[in-house]
Length: 78
Image 1 (cartoon, rainbow, N blue to C red):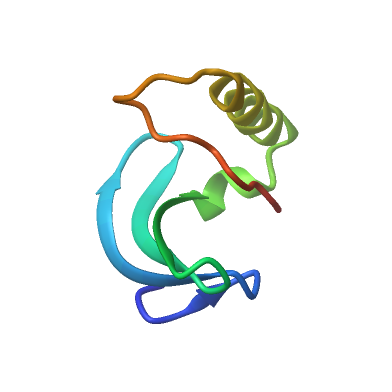
Image 2 (cartoon, rainbow, N blue to C red):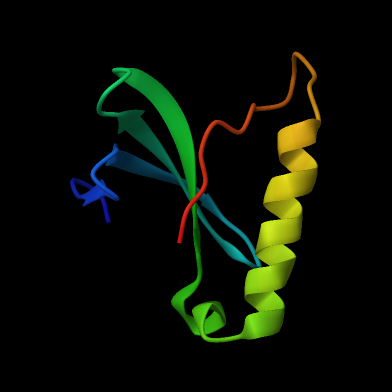
């Protein structure tokens, strides 16, 4: 995905890490011209309703959490 623009918003700059649910990239938000972290769910999990719901729960929970050492969620999509 490096070099691609996702959802007309985020240009992927480099892969940062990978876990059980997805891959995290450093990206640039095209409109805000700001560096962001972009998590992409593994393609093998996209067709699983249970995995998608787990990912949505993660987004909702993390978006309510604020701490100076935790990345703030500004956007989500499918």
